[in-house]
Image 1 (cartoon, rainbow, N blue to C red):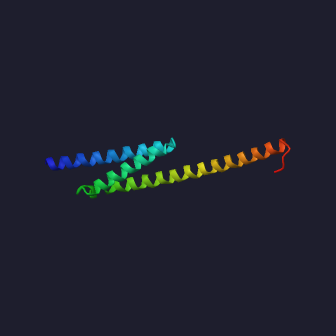
Image 2 (image 1 turned 90 degrees about the vertical axis):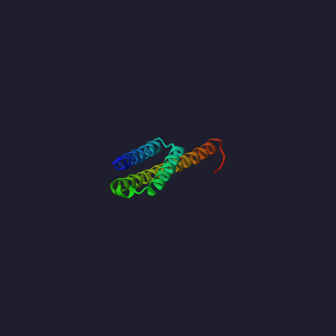
Image 3 (image 1 turned 30 degrees about the vertical axis):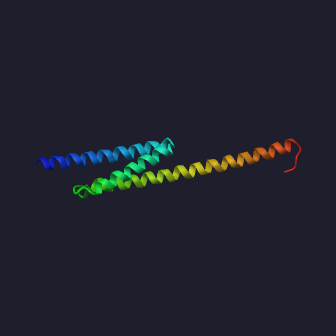
Length: 111
C-alpha cells in the first residue's frame, strides 16, 4: 500500500513540476527573456529524461500528451516572437537607412 501512495505522490509531483516549468517557459517567452526560456527548456528536458526512467511514468500518458501539446504551442509562440523581432529589426534597418539618406540630402551630398 505504501508503494502505491509513493507512486501516486511521485506522479503528482512530476505533473506539477512539468506544469511549473511550462508556465515558467511561457512567461519568459511573453517577457522575451530568452535566457530564462532556455533555462526552463533545459530543465524540462532534464526532468522528462529523468522521468522516462521511472516505471510509473508510462502510465502518465495523458500528462505526457498534454506536455507535448503545450511544448509544441510554446515552440510556435517562440517562432511567432522571432518573426515579429525579425520584422522589427528590418523596419529599424530601413528607417536607419532612410534617415541616413535624408541627412545626406540635407547636407547637400549625393546618395
